[in-house]
Image (tube, rainbow, N blue to C red):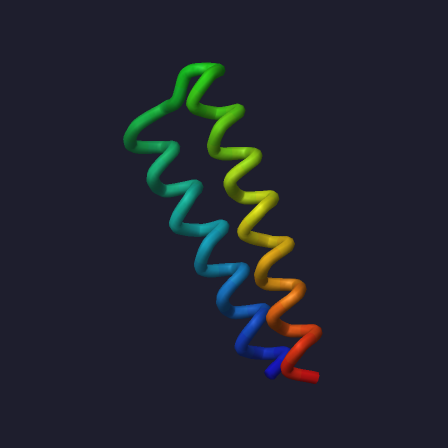
Length: 52
């Protein structure tokens, strides 16, 4: 399970970096994406905690 969560996080980070390289963001959309990513990480953390 640990390998799955690590792979999911690495894939998410790599995908986001590729998207940012192709299509850069302005400050407003960067702030929204930052908060959205924080919420997603909190949900993933809660889900992994429930599984263990």
